[in-house]
Structure formats: structure tokens, C-alpha cells
Image 1 (spheres, one colour):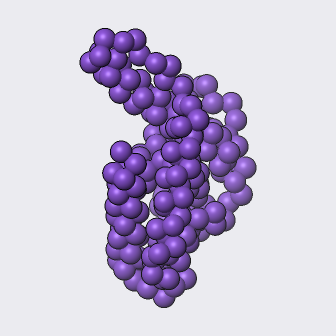
Image 2 (cartoon, rainbow, N blue to C red):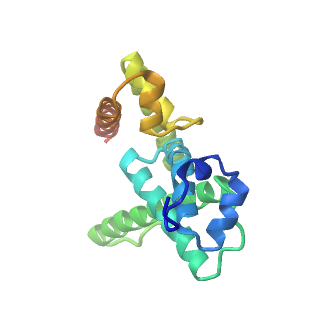
Image 3 (tube, rainbow, N blue to C red):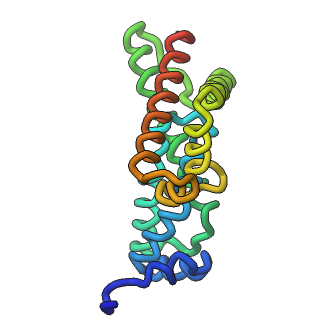
Length: 199
């Protein structure tokens, strides 16, 4: 193995605290492994708060970018994962929601000549988020057994990679990815229908 390449097996088995210490020191390979280990848990935590799948994946990516930027600028003193990343992702989701609400309310206020309302989420917003999560869970329960099992395996609390899921279920990686794509599309349709009924 050349000096510039890492031993993937050693990294896979490396304790999280040691990996975090390497990342804090600017080791790009360590950051890559931390992203691999913890990204799905971040996505799941956002889904539980009613964030759409595509938005949750984008927010998870932005979370890692911000953490890396903080490390490079010397502002990241500790790296307790996945907790720190989950908290930061939820903050980003809240900021995005408030920005969206502010834009909609400003547009509404401009249209009727009234001042914009407080953008902070209220009881109705919280209730709507809970309804979205219930819609996701109900639709997931209606998915075929194997599709549901694959989705939970990759995005659940004990998240694994699609490749690991393929090995576990005896499927090709392409089939696993196709199933995940179909399930995500199905959940998005269910959310869209729910939003249409609620409007």
C-alpha cells in the first residue's frame, strides 16, 4: 500500500474518539469516515422533525461542511458525534424553516399591506411537523416488507450503508439503491398528497 493511501479496514475499526481527534487535527480521511458513519443518523433525526427527505440530506451535507469549516478556522474545540452534528443539523433546519416562513409572511404582508408576523414556529407549525412525520411512518408501513426493511436498515437508528444492506439481505447493490430510491419517491408523494389535502 502506498504511503498516501489509508488502510480502510483500520479506519473502519478505529474508535470514534480517536477518529474525532484525527479530524480535529485536519485529517481529511478521518472526516470522510466520520461522515460515512454518522450521516444517516443526522438524516433520520431531521426526518423525525418533519423535514423532507431531500432537504434532510442537503442539511446533513451542509452540517458537515460547517463543521469542517469550523475546524479549519480553529473554532471547533471538540467533536462529540453524532450529538454535535445532530444538534447543528437541527439548528440549520430551524433556520431554514424560519427563513421560509419569514419570506412567505413578508410576501403575504406586502400583498395585503400588513406588517409581517413573528417568524418563530408556533403550535400550528409543530402540529404540522408531527402530521408530516405520521404521514411518513404510515406510508412506510404500507411499503412492501423488503422495501421497508431496507429503508429502515439504511436510515434507521442502527444505520448501515447501502453496500452493507446489500450484503445483509443478499441483494445486489444496484437493487438496494433502486429500492431506496423508489421508497423515497413514495414517501415524497405521500407528503405531497398530505400537503395538498391540508391546503
